Length: 244
Length: 244
Image 1: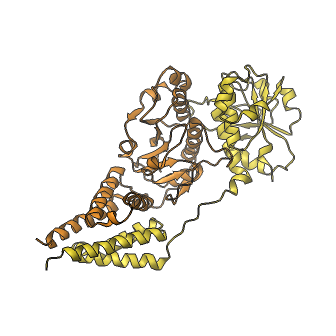
Image 2: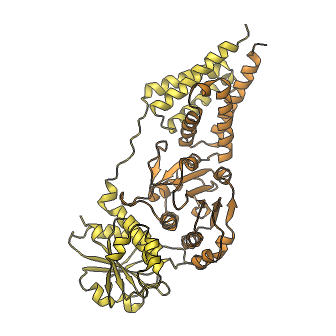
Image 3: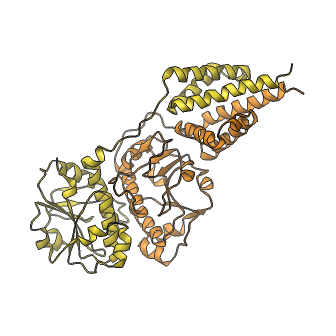
């Protein structure tokens, strides 16, 4: 399977120091490490390091290149991110489509995902070096995404597709066995009968609703112990206070 | 089908002016418009408006509220975003899972997606007001996402879900509003105090467990009516049988 951590994020003519840092941060969040800066219009400065929040190394290791053509020369596949309709691209991928398509690549293919300058995005002159178009779905009335937000969304989808996220362990629930829940439900029914709640209602229907509530709650062993403890205590209280 | 544009983004104790603007911008990109600021630690200032890049109105219309409990009172479903493992949440959703689950809600249900302060994220004290956990998958070595990046990823998934054509859900849930569930929880606490159950245990811990049980149960309006009816009936019974 394709190794998503080999993908490079290529930023073209970036203007904002802060965006450099924000991009580095979210790349590291999503397990990406290869950053390429093409004709960068600012330096990697204090604001960049501040915004990177711990991804300084990724910034320091960024590959600075002159000219997009040079930058992409060694890549097997270059993908241009733009919301515009560009006539010559046959394939327009959403981030999730893209991830599905990349999965089928063999593991040694070098892939670049290219993002344009903040104010204009990628021009046709940039896009001519790209084979695929990547389009992030947005409200058609307000399509201009912040650069780091665009990278965040794409990197998130790539991470979703990577094996790293698939192997994340799930939290095991220690569910109570059915017989414990059943015993609690029967205790509850007795109590409700005693306080004459059931007689005023349709008993079958009320008990069914209560069963459903506790069934949706996915009760754990400890939960059932507490719930039964409440009913036991309530019996004790009722007995102690009973008129003789 | 559920109308995703009705979802509110709830930011708790936000510290950075810039993040307020960045969040507003990406919300507008993804067709969201309801922003709630809880105990906001900064003002909506020049830096917010600059970073919003055209989403000024969304910032101006933000609802400023004191206290998360107040902020969530009128919502049917509150979803807390955290990367921590929180024992009591049985359902931990990824952004894409969440979107799939929200599709099944009926169209008038108010949903809040809650994001914590930049430095700490949501604490357990915040999370106790939430029914579901939302966890954005990240590299386990570097989990702390920028606030606006987190909102960007979630809003992107919601937008994906809204534009995708999906078949109608089987039975839409009519969830109780948070204030109804809260009133029931408080009734319950009073009763447990009266029968001296809480004094024998760690009261905070027991109440937290009970809150979690009922939160996992996704209570509907009718469920809450029945549960409160039981407590009312129990009070009546206790009074009638009290030793004089």
